[in-house]
Image (cartoon, rainbow, N blue to C red; front, side, top):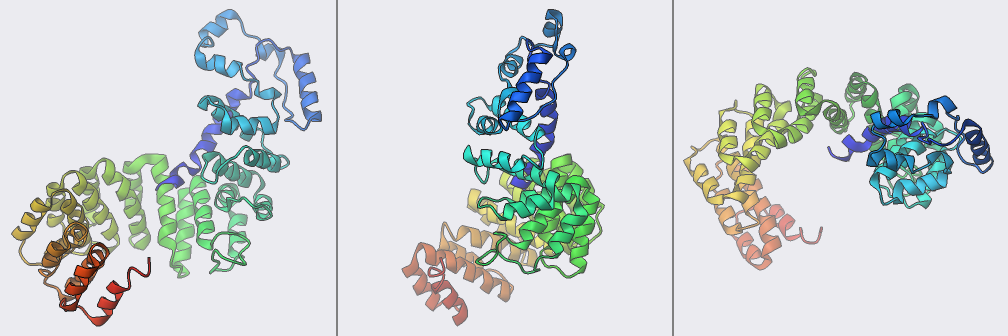
Length: 441
């Protein structure tokens, strides 16, 4: 949920800001002088802007006072003549100016003047100024380039060393989804990153970019596209649906997104959206998130969402979280929730968590709770964790939990773990997996 929410938001802000920047804010320049400067800029390969009218640029002392122009921000804007700067200078200011407002204004101006003809020059200017792969300016530039130039931007990126195809195809899909999807459909279904792949990315990343662009445009279109892929038997649709959910969260917040998710068709895509929403919702208001998800707690597709709420609530109020989980209908959601809640509670207050486990009667949900406790506590006290894991009633779950505890034990105290393994009762295969775990790191 993370960087995707921020990937496209600045582009919309940039265009609004650029409107004000593009006005010039040059009080003393006349129309004739501006026209001459613009012609000189064009001859030097700089931007060609339309000169504001002299009437539009003239302000009286009263008007300046009324508009607050005497404040520090207007003075900052007035003191920076973006209209006289070339692409390279603006790119450098966007990334290097010590004042963050000037950096933002410069980048807004850069994007507002971007065309399919000068996009490559802007790109080169940003790279020369040291733009990083994770910088928002780099993502926003590539999104804007895809928006303006579509396939030409994507194809042009392939010839360059530094690329962000996710953002390019996302911008492309936001304005021309039909052709962006058609282009994607031509690629091998199992395209993977590696030698011989000139795209330098995998198909899933590009599909996520298309879905993000579709969601920027229309969330229903994005949902239909992901549903189509699910019907075709694609196995990665859950991650694509998370991309849609993140866009809805960005637009409407967790509560609005939770209302949207409730309207989706029951099934795995609804579960993926709910799980993604639940993570952030429960972090800010776990009780409210619990009230939302408990209606769906009996459904297998809501398993992850229930687990997310249980875990995040347990980080604040473990007893309240566990009490809520115990009242839910029995099912995978309740089990996963108790597992995640006790996996957090053991870290904060193992004595209280252990006492609660002792008060629970033997049941599948107690097995899940013990498993969460034991596997988490193994990193602090593996011997105590083993004792708890042995108390799990279901033999399959018990052995799985003992194996997981064994991994932690062997990482912490390998010689002690070897002695325990010899008498653990675990299968030869499980023992071998534990002993070989260090080699796989």
